[in-house]
Length: 180
Image 1 (tube, rainbow, N blue to C red):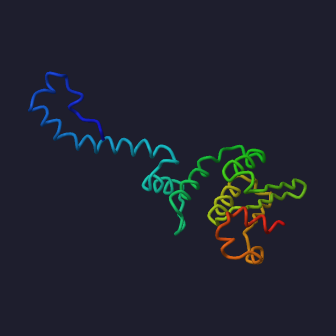
Image 2: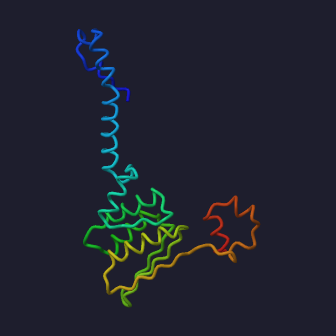
Image 3: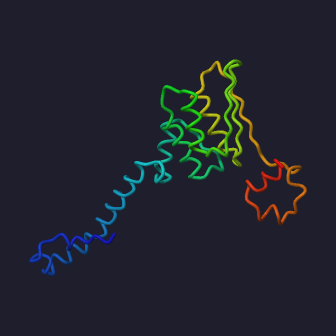
């Protein structure tokens, strides 16, 4: 840290060699204290929480992270668990999903007459499908059938393109070939 204890002393004491040496010796301990303070503040928010804080949240919610889940994936999952508030309505649930993944990445269709909710996910991670499944299990009433479909690009969809074209493309550009 750039905080030095000598800067907090009154001017007459700061000029004394004894106090200069004393504060210089204590500066590393206070640096550790400030670092711990910053970690506590960072842990208070999911977006800035470190690995240890996310592990505490996972223990609280009895979540077992996947073997290949990154810290960002785990943060997203904890954020979903913390954002589920009652009562759950269809507009609230749709807004939550679209806010998390974007309007273009998820299509939500409710067939109220047949008690069916269809979620078409256009996201390229199985982790997010797990998050959506857990969220739907918690938020959607038990009498509504939830159908989650992952819309991945398949080899047949991109076969007409060369590997260099696919490699240089973004996911949505490859997806446009499928829809044409």
